[in-house]
Length: 316
Image 1: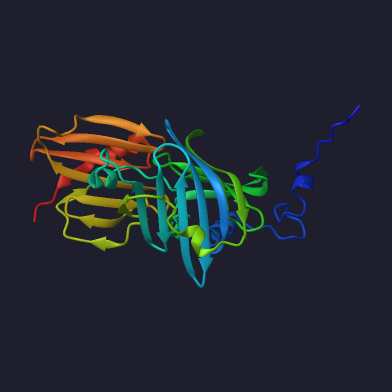
Image 2: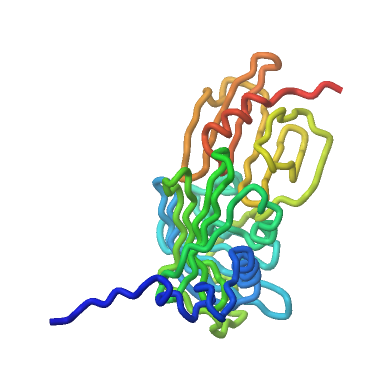
């Protein structure tokens, strides 16, 4: 009869640098730093799944890092045929041309390229007073040994994260977006080769036939214009990263949300609350002036509602 041997936790972690032994433990902040570097500096080819609410995307990704530059190609394996090419900050989404597609509609359709941008990861140090970072042990993802990290908010006005990082490189292999223990979004590699040779041809457009394209905003840049509206209440740690008249964007270094104010007309949305995975959309109507306020972002409903209720016009 085969016997099952269960190792103590300390034995399971031995040799990983996480057991507090002679191999000094890397704390969670060190691993997050490695993650930020790996996503920019490693060559890799793989397939990941990304689940948000009722949507489920399977995406093939090829990433090339050379001479301090990045090139990346993402190709959807289910749903609409779509390909995304990224060269550093420049991101272009390509679709096969058809009579049913309009460039304007495509520019406003969601394109999921994973939970984090490289620039998002670089901001993580700014958020350390707003979240608790901890190491939760070792796991196995896509046949790679992985370190499991927890990022828990100090208050319930934002989401938390669980991250699984490749033991050798620190590359993100899996993540969960969490709201008080409930998983809202899941990103996971099902297969990945890290450190493999990648050629320029592998990160070039592969769609055959006529295409239409539009640029994507990968990351908000610090930029300000004279605001027309203001948000009177923000969760602790959130700051504006872009203000353009009636469009305001905020981040705490991890989470982001945006506020849009438009003149109300017959085609305006009714007051509503809806969610897709961890993304919430709240609309609110103002009588004076006759306007519609929309809050969109990765924050809990109660936080988005309080933000929407605090929006008011600026009087100069």
